[in-house]
Length: 335
Image 1 (cartoon, rainbow, N blue to C red):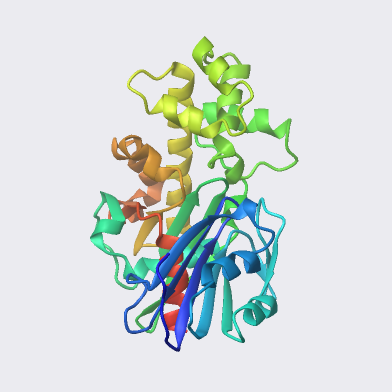
Image 2 (cartoon, one colour):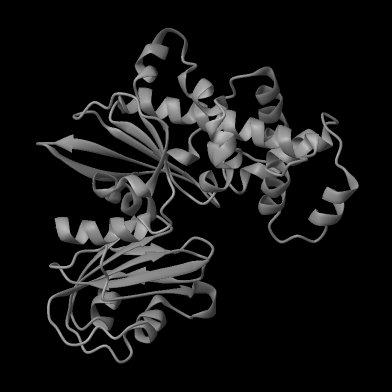
């Protein structure tokens, strides 16, 4: 990390997740894309966000005016518990840690959505350019460890981001095979949401369904690779995206893409998100060729009598891994 030097009125932005914490210090004049200092830390190796902030700011002689942090978890009354991490983050503690700075806590998807109006071509991979409605709402879906959802609405010519817990809505199958998947998971869970079938948690659920119901055989190489794996998702994706995928991995990814496309289309209809759909999270950039081959868009637009609404909606993949961090920073500038 470079020394930010002396200066007043700086903004500290953060993207706080259970796996890693990204921080960036910037000035209003230079903006979020030209940070004075930036670093990424393994979250699990620290006892609190305050400990990471102390490390990051060690030796930096600067007055922090604002702090803006996107956190992986719901934010309620200025407090948040980070998903998959035993931290509680609250506005008061962060303000004290930053010398009385004004603090804003955002859900991580709200932070990601806040970056959308400021994205540049290099931040995106476009599945369909479409014809965006400049006043239409915008939908954001992020399949990573879980399934995050958010949206933006245009108010007076300015887009504002809003969080959502839509990933926990009821999973609605669209094929006979998906109906069987739902029945299989209902025997294990009291409630089957989209997150259980459309995320890093969901991919192994689909894989086990296909394997355990005899719809596809697991080859020895996958049995060995998955034995004792803490997280089977990268292994399943890696095989599915290889030059010689097994039938089981390929079917798993195919179902995942069709469910993701259908839920993205659902969001457009619910929100009239004619301004576009943006796919974030850790999974889409890793499966880009599969998303680009047409399966996603077919599922996205398969809405019967209202398929026409989907035809002109742009669909983009967020390929800049710093989108959440940028969103937290731009949120501070907007405020």
